[in-house]
Image 1 (cartoon, rainbow, N blue to C red):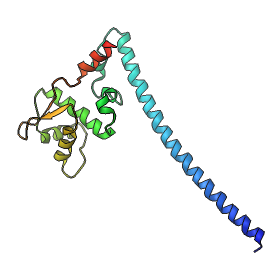
Image 2: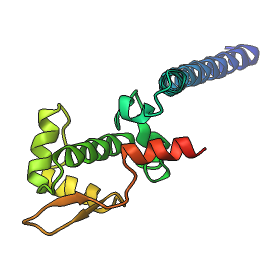
Image 3: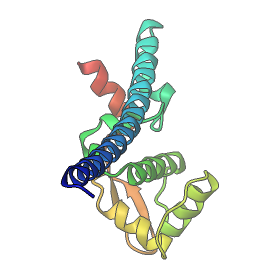
Image 4: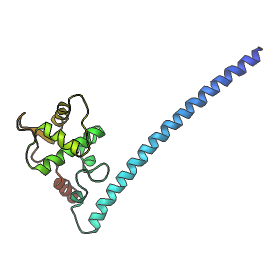
Length: 169
C-alpha cells in the first residue's frame, strides 16, 4: 500500500471513531433530556394542582394532593428531602404517611410490612435494618427504642405544616 493509502485508512478509522463517540454522546443527551422533560411535566402538574386549589378557594392544596401528591410530592420541596436519593425519599414519605395515619409509634418490622402492602419494597439483605438506617438519618423521625418503634418528630413538617408554610408566603 502506498503511503497515501495508509494515511487515508488512518483518517477513515479516526473519523469512524469520532462518529461513534458523537453518536453515543447524542444518545446520552437524549436520555438526559427525556428525564428532565419528565421531571418538568411532574413539576408543572404539581404546580397546577396547587394553583387549582388556590383558585377554588380551598387553601388546603397540600392536604388534597397529599404528602406523596403528584409525582415528586410535597416533600420534594422541603429542603431536608431534596438531597436524599429518590428511592429513599419515596420510602421516607411513605413512612411519614403510615405513621401519621396510624397516630402511634410503630416498630420497624411493621412499617416494612405496611410499605410492602402499598407496593413499596425496601432494598438490602435485611429490610428492617435498611429501613431503620434510613429513618435514623432523617430529621423527621425518632426511635423510641426497639420495642416501641418509630414516631414522627413532634413539630416535623407535616401536610398541614406545608400548607401553613405555603399560605404564609
